[in-house]
Length: 75
Image 1 (tube, rainbow, N blue to C red):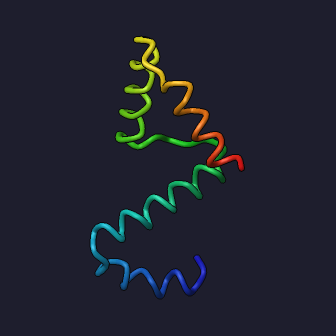
Image 2: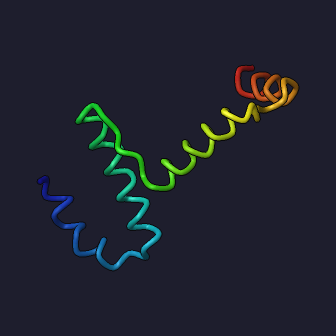
């Protein structure tokens, strides 16, 4: 481990839980990229399952809404 990380560990222990979780998420993403796979959090898994359930019901975004998104983000 590089020295700057070793020096930061004691400070991180005193960070608010929200900041520690943000750091943990960044670490999970780096580890997933290095390992070639990503393990979803329970929240992400729930969101995916919700989306699949909506798709099975045929509950999709209206064409107009999708066109607006494409226009906004692809311009």
